[in-house]
Length: 381
Image 1 (cartoon, helix red, strand yellow):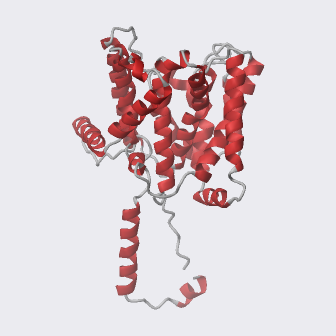
Image 2: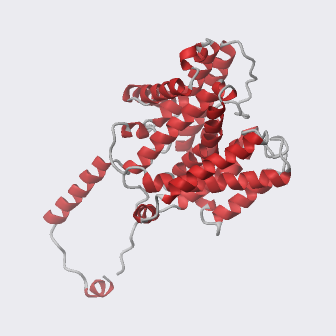
Image 3: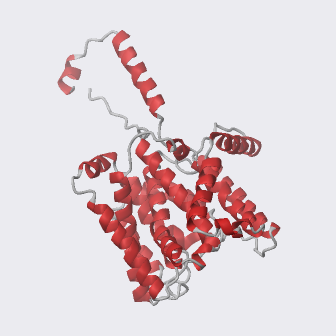
């Protein structure tokens, strides 16, 4: 008899993926902190702001897709994504009101907060199993996103516009195989990617800033018209975003180190950073802390962003966040399994777990008697 092989959906642990996540969550924080003030005063930082905005969320969403290969459970995603979305939106709203600014509590319209990503990830994870089977899903998704930019109904409501615009990156990550990464890393000309990426990251912001084009088109939040662009220009800029983002994704996969670094552990603790950093920044800005002269330069804000990542990505903060979410889901739901930091894609087994599992299998294989195969089984092996 032919024995059926069961495919394990768990991914082997990868230092490379964690290192990419560390870099991207730092760019998320840095992009937000410079958006408060400095990008309006410093032209160099304005270029950096545009360059980061082009690719940092597309790359993060690509990683999310890659780490979402397991079969998705609705209740699990409600616990790990929708509940943090509601709490994170509420915390951001409260911080805004606390500093004296006006903000309507529109939880179905998360624009102006960082929480839209959790809502998008919830939708992606529950649909990608079917969408990933569609032929040419990535090109089809890009065509849909280009068309969505012409339609006003794709707006901030339920993050509909962003969900459509960034979906090609998620499905591309979902379909990506670790073997592709190995091929890219073996490619002798991979260093050319740095030159090409750098050229694109300078030329596109330069063109847009010189022509007075807002960065909003890269956020995927509005139609071309709302972004102040004609349909033709909007389509071209959005296509360039896909070109730049995929180029940068391949560059990160090819060149970032695939080994444990001093900050690699943060790659497993990104949810606390993502959840807390924006409300804290709103409070700091309202208290005039972000306007301290020593912080009004790119080096000061780089240091501040690094401090955010280091503190909010530390094991104690991750532990407190995880335990709070465990307690909350225990109070809401009848049965609760341990909630880990899965809000930002902790979907693979640890290297220690894999080594322990392999060692156990070898021991079982060595100790177990070998049964004699039936004649017809021998013919099929």
